[in-house]
Image (cartoon, rainbow, N blue to C red; front, side, top):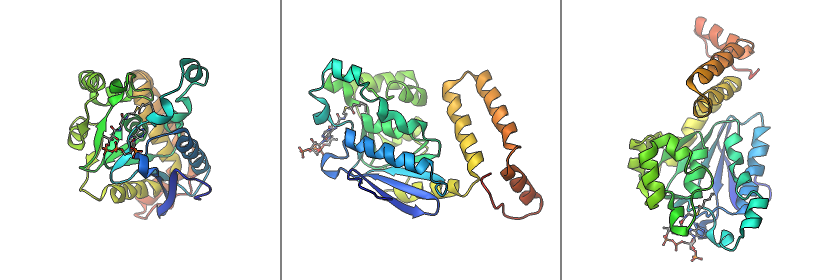
Length: 260
Ligand code: HXC
């Protein structure tokens, strides 16, 4: 599984779960093109791996990721970033169809905060420090910071954070609904693996439909979203897992999903 990756580590902490650990410790996991190339390749492999039901994405104790690699970015020119659509392939993770849980310790700044926000669930250590400091570099967030942060915590807070570039704490992130919860120090990866393991034990078709449904709440109007939800719900009656799940309940047995 590890392959030739140098900037990420892959491990299997629980049945059905892959953990991806960002691994550029000397640069506080600053995100560069090699790292994204590897992350995208790993996710592509995991997409087609039937045995995997959920993924945990994490960094180190000190940094989930301290942002895009400023040293790699600093000499780029407009024509190059525009023609090459710089950052477009950095957001590939947001179209990954299996649940992905960010376990955030330490810095999640700039692109690091944006990467966490592309995940489906964020769990935070009390040491987590979030922020969109791009304004201090003469730019703005470029991988969803002005959009996903605003959706998650509201315009006024997002505007203040993006315009001032100030960091915010795990507790703030939790109070504002950016993260699902703050766990005790040192336990964020274990907690994320527990959640991922639970999800990996469900029927994969229902999980995929559930993720699609929740994500559509960000994209669609309420009427369109409710319509999509109803259609997804109806579609699941065409699966074996729906029969298996409901029959198991009625017979007081444990459902043995076939993911079909
Ligand atoms: C490149 C980085 C880096 C980054 C840290 N490093 N962040 N290198 N890009 N984003 C490197 C430092 O240069 C240093 O390398 C080493 O990691 C350790 O960092 P220090 O600064 O010495 O650590 P510390 O004093 O503990 O400060 C931690 C920090 C600070 C507060 C997180 O490193 C920092 O402010 N980093 C930049 C945060 C930032 O602005 N992020 C947004 C980037 S823009 P050496 O070689 O000196 O040891 C962005 C755009 C998003 O993300 C676009 C879409 C993806």
